[in-house]
Length: 601
Image (cartoon, rainbow, N blue to C red; front, side, top):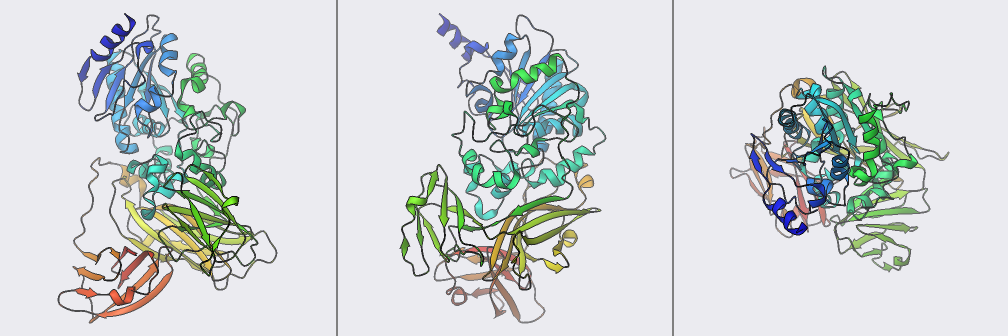
């Protein structure tokens, strides 16, 4: 009889309609299958059953990048059952999984109007996981729903972004999207875009009421009950040393919204769980309930939330599988290095060869987990081969470090790089080059763009190397930064920055993610070059009869230059010029018109 009742409840749910949402009535918690909520093709409001002891309070749940059915109904999440038992009306809102903060914020604002009207309440409570926390602040402050929200609980929300997403923004690391669980919407919700656009805009917004936010930031990426997710394994080796204590996706420091109340301290023994666990009722409900029923006084935790002069530090450089020219090279003063590798194939195998192409027997020293392998090395000039695509972070023990600071001056950023060491015999910086490959990835409002990469050079001045961004076009840029002192050291950092007036660009946010279509083009056919390569140029004019061509490796290092004589067809065979290149990814620039990426087989 119970099974029959359950089936009737599941298949006779009332489906209503609103402008942007499908509306669905859920059965009681005890009759709800974990697989009831299937793939969401349209934004949906799922109404929980009104409990017999309804206390008049409505709680709206919103997910992050994990689908609603995964975060709210799988993993034996107890939120629905807990709220029902306690007399709360639960509503689960699925916005979109990949559209980012502004579109999800607008949808969430619309759902707040629908829900408050349906249950005839003036205010409701928001419980939002991960990027749902940023959709909540956009809905409340930018889209004007703050008066309809009594409190907003942000569970593991990376308000300042996460380095894990920064890595995923590199055009030549697109395969990493699958490993992180992130998608294209991450560019406006999880990267440096948070630090450079969202925080300055919303924290200074006239509608901002930070005291309405209660933050639950976890600290135990290694302790979660759901640690099987690949992203957590990636984070342990890459994110933790870079951004400190984290839950596997969100660094604890990034979860601290300025002016909010913080439930847990960093490394709080009550919060040693991971990014998925913080979204589960059995971990978080008791703390949330205490705030709703008896709002606690302002928490005395006063962590450092000053990110104005953002700084990131590196003791590593990055190599990747596609580049035959990438080798493991020890610093002049290094006796060993640890190579931490993230790889597409979860059970990838690795081989290490010396400079004479002899295979080394090092496999016994490898530490292997799903999608991650750690390889200690103590020899110079090694090649790493695998049956999987990979990116390897080679960490040196020489004491040489590179730091990147984003210095805000009026409405633009200056990028400052410092290279230093904690050892007395620090190498001279006389012959050091600091360069970067940058790619414009979106407009300031988050509209994605298809732009080519370009190489920029940092100028040495007094205590560091500097690049002023003011002469770049407005937009959001990814940054692959590299420093090199040939034969002595090399360092890498992945980050990004924003150029332009944030406030003016976000006054009106367009929701259409249209791509810019270039009228001019430069391309190589085929894009993956083996023996033959033809360069096509369209829409560009030259002042003389010659074109200057430069080729860079993926770090922006100048590999070779040559000239070609123009012709009427603007079609040039450059096969001979590329034959000497090792296999890998390269950038080709023509007369500073444009820089394009190509592969050499």
